[in-house]
Length: 372
Ligand SMILES: Nc1nc2c(ncn2[C@@H]2O[C@H](COP(=O)(O)OP(=O)(O)O)[C@@H](O)[C@H]2O)c(=O)[nH]1
Ligand SMILES: [Mg+2]
Ligand SMILES: [Zn+2]
Image (cartoon, rainbow, N blue to C red; front, side, top):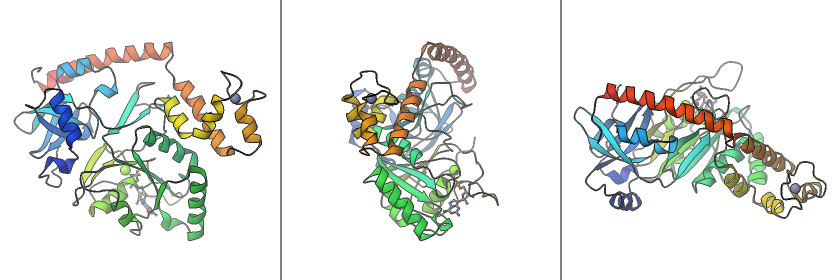
């Protein structure tokens, strides 16, 4: 595995370290350990970074055996206590508590994930750039879902509408109006990675030590925008086919990039679908007005779909709530129920855990370090 050195990091604060992590490290009795930030994730290994450089790191056996879910394993953005070994390797001793997590639930059809498993997209994120491109990718329902993911974790969401070079100013304006009507007071930045449009506005969100995560389907231009911000082609990008505005799918790792001004950016491989983790909290916080009506509904177990006398349905009829917003609310509720853990799901999870332990044992043998 090749670790390419990025921008030189002189102070750990430039990687996002602050008093929060400092006090957690002390509380956990880890002051004697070095700390580093997880900058990339590979199969069974991580690239971690601190003021001493980059290391290829693995978890200790004990950590792997204790890990019950994805949340017990390091994710890009995590701060970890490490033991630095020679030849650029390190062992991860602990994950420091996270300030924020962007997570999603795997859908049924996702080949790479366990069914019903939660995947941490990134942690300790300050700003979530939710990227959509004009054209076929643009979907206000999907924007709403991504917003729910960001808001669930108190991360500042900023919507990026990319590839505006492909549409007229009128078309852009009508999209911006639609977003404002539906999603309210939210930062929206129209960009073009081709025409260098909107990049200065983006830079304002990416200050020293601040971590920004780019979210969105594959092909919308996340990597292109990061390349533009870095002012070099650090990341491979897909190419547009002649017949569609959709970029070809390029597989990349989830990885962190560092701006000259000290800002930190996390690129993501394409996210096909946005599953909802911790459904109720997210959905209810996003659909405040609808949720308030739901609480006052006559029926405790109302589905708000067909019940006569349902408060939500009558508000819908009176035009007091937006029809599209209602549809999205109902489909998210359905999805959340579907993803909710049932007995079959639990059995499956246990089986997968057994497989995981087996694999971890084998990998650790290959890595050949002793357990701390
Ligand atoms: N016309 C146009 N094409 C873009 C823009 N940004 C990215 N692209 C193209 O869209 C394709 C996908 O871009 P990429 O950055 O790989 O998308 P990602 O999958 O979200 O990282 C590439 O062919 C880019 O050249 C843009 O602003 N305008
Ligand atoms: Mg990309
Ligand atoms: Zn109801």
